[in-house]
Image (cartoon, rainbow, N blue to C red; front, side):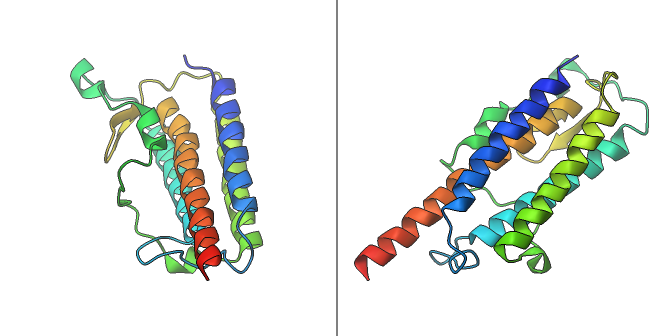
Length: 177
């Protein structure tokens, strides 16, 4: 059984990276897009909150039923570290809800609230082996319960990099202004 402590630590470390990236975004730049087709930091945070909420809800739903037998072939998936790479732009299967886009402090509070719910859920489910519970990720393949929560952290690393790129774009625009 994978260690939930290692997952919680991964979530803590990756959240710190995300918050450091967010600290570099000024309040006036928070909702601004640095280029056409690019998300603002506010949109990134709304997306992260929505994704973690969907993953938490999916995990809670799926463990209510007995695990389904899955063949070895069906358990194969792409490595989770791919999520951290920003080589290729990927469109989220969860559409961004504009109503979720908020000012910086509110966005940080909302993301922290869902993380607290995630940590409570992981604590409540500790001591039980959920490795047999799987559901399909749209790009990676079939992930088990534990892999989904590691994915949450990796997803934040990806978007911390995106926010850093946003800050760099704003700095270049300011430099050339």
